[in-house]
Image (cartoon, rainbow, N blue to C red; front, side, top):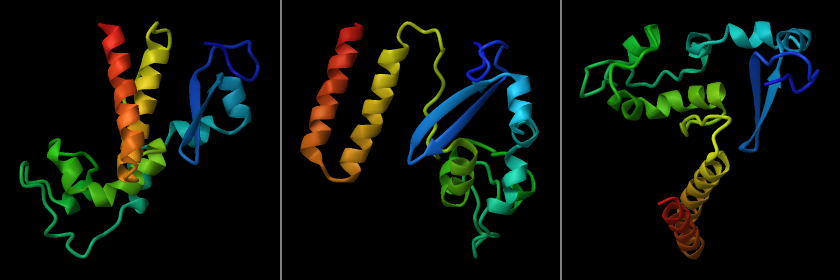
Length: 158
């Protein structure tokens, strides 16, 4: 994929900007990313750089995953989870980090850029988010309409 700015060189960086839950991706070559000072500031970032965002709850020594035994204090010193249950156990404390790193605290996965089903997959993801929002807002008629639209999309696949 070519750089979205110079349209000459191969893109090596995808710069994603999230404003009001709307994602915009910009594909940049090394030259354009360096010129805008994005490579130095983005390429070296990692979870450990955001440790300062981690909250330190009053029960820091008691907060522990019942499945693997990882304590929150141990997680802070080496930010790696012990098992999949750790995400739920430490959810309140890590949500701000995930939002800062990814623009969202919800993982929606990745899709191949050249996939023929890409637009359909995007539509399904968008509808799922709208369905979740409608249910959260207690807009049940809207939720039912979105559910039916999702069913129709899925039945068209098979």
